Length: 398
Ligand SMILES: [Zn+2]
Image 1 (cartoon, helix red, strand yellow):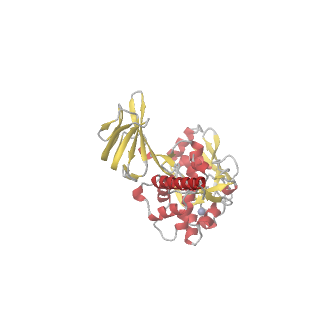
Image 2 (cartoon, protein in one colour):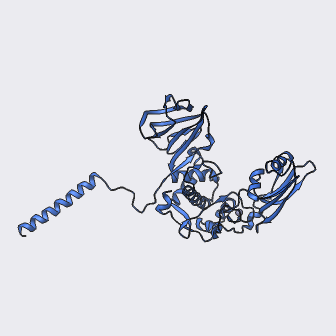
Image 3 (cartoon, helix red, strand yellow):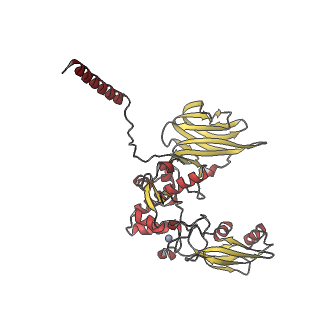
């Protein structure tokens, strides 16, 4: 080998050795670039909305930072109270003098807020008016997949045998709905059924964790975009059309409603009594007069769910959506079978279903899982035509 060629070969060997050393010193990240991302979700702990003080524990090492990221305090173990003080947030014995702080535990699942063990870090703010502090707002920042475990644990009782496919379907729906809502709203999700119920980690079950792991990063899509994957407790005989219900301003085939005949008598029809006082209050609030003469269903969906009600008051009448009346009267659903006025003025309503009726029906999903349906078949029944796919990087960066 001629000397220049030998020098070149030596240089190549040296370069390879240097690359190898560099790789040993700075190992490649273990996560492959194809692995689904796990973005952070902001979750408002609404159970503590505007509370003046909240019991807080932190296990292991922790840091307290201000809004700019400056470390205000470091410590090990904490057990005490979060308080809204005239000067800012008080964390245990520490007066931070700031209206917004972050509590960052070093370990996983190291926060205890009230009775709830929580993953992630806690953002604490003081709400105040001119007279002083009104209370605290708590926003948990946690990994999406942990959030979905908390939702599945809260939304479906996961201890029963033979329901793994239903839990997986619920995990995909909950993940999809969360990403769709975060993208649309921009702000935090609420940790209650107005968005999705969420259980602290002390209530997480092995079955819920398994369902989330088995579906990691998977979402429901329609035409390549995230589906607004609404779900509810019990359809009562068929799911609702999201556009008819005014949950969407356009038709979406996977959310146009589907028959679920076995759910007609899956549970017995409910009977609720709405007091005369409550009806009178409703009449006054809607400016219909001092009392309500009658309530009629003017439009129903194919499964009997009332889409529009006509309320006739002592002075005026008005049409309202089934969902609005369900919410105002605190009834389980708008799938009314009968409504009779009693002599004392109370309204006796018989109905089926629980919840708005759109998308995945939990009672139906559990029944289908026990009958041997797999996750995709359960999702295909309640979201016909939707495609289960890994969430795109764009969907994961809300
Ligand atoms: Zn159903």
